Amino acid sequence: MLCLFPLTYTVQEMSMRLGAVTHEGFSRLARRRYGKFWGYYHISTLAFENLLTLITEFIGMTAGLVLLGIPMWLSDLLCLAFVASFVVFTGYFTKERIALFIALLDVVYLVIAGMTHPSMSAIGHAFIAWNVPHALRAGVLWFVIATIGNAIAPWMIFFQGSGTIDKGVGSKELRLGRIDTAVGLILQVVIAAAIIVIGASLFGHMQNASSAGPSDIINGLHHTVGRWGATLFGIGLFDAGFLASITVSLSSSWSIAELFGWSKSLNDKIKEAPKFYAVYIGSLVLAALAILIPNLPLNFISIVTQVVGGILMAPLLIFLVLMTSDKKLMGAYKTKLFGRIWGWSMVALLIGLTVATFWQTFTSL
Image 1 (tube, rainbow, N blue to C red):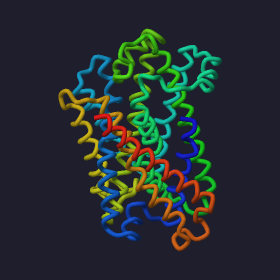
Image 2: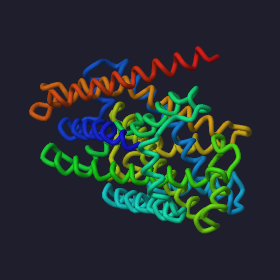
Image 3: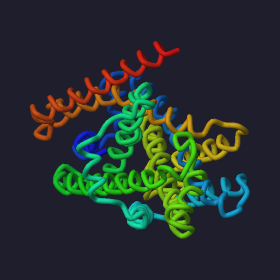
Image 4: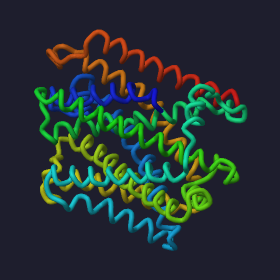
């Protein structure tokens, strides 16, 4: 997770810089420069991946409410209503501050990690003696590419670029944009580390932990951090799913609206950008309906979603590196030589992991 910081920063910085300099979103640029096929390809794969991602977010959001005794269908409806209500607020900066407030609530994970009374020496030893347990070695590539797919999901490129444009960030604000991106990623890594510590505290307190869902994990935390800690974890799951649902849905709305030339600003009211908000709410409704399907393999979907995200990132990164390295498009803000080498190294890494994952999957059948 710590090693993914430079990878994630590179992708977000390139996307932010591309939007700030060109004032065009990724999907529109891809269509204009490389043809309609690639424009529609990126949008269709984004919509598919985003729908899967939204399903996983609704899984997490509803878990805490279900444990409070609220029926699954009502929990699902409440989560949908909460996330959809985001659109009623007026203005980009109002919505941005609401999202930032929601993000700040993730501090509960740090509190819960502290409640587990982690051993600093054990954590330090884990860095030195890290290894893959024998029982997990057969599927380790799945988890590696899933972790990468979670850290640099496709929606991130579209959201970062379109959000930069909507906010009005220009090339003169690139320094502040880079600081903003770096701070966000540092916080992401800290929260992820806290969640890993929380998960480690469940060792020996749960059966079949690898197949446990959100509800099982919350129940397991009752034994390690007590009722309040488990409740806080449920709140954290809801909060994280809430924020992710907003950003993932907005990435679809911005990208599709831009490709087709629709109004697409968060400064617009619903009646001023009906198609933009229709995509936002429509994607949420589909995800909310999906988790009500009986016997849906929710854990499997959660892992597969991240694996698909990692696989789909390779072609997106190719176009991102190409466009940010183009002097005609970026001018003085094009990616420097070292950045291009690093960017193509990331592409090679993702392609290699994708090929290895397919090879391991099909040879084990």
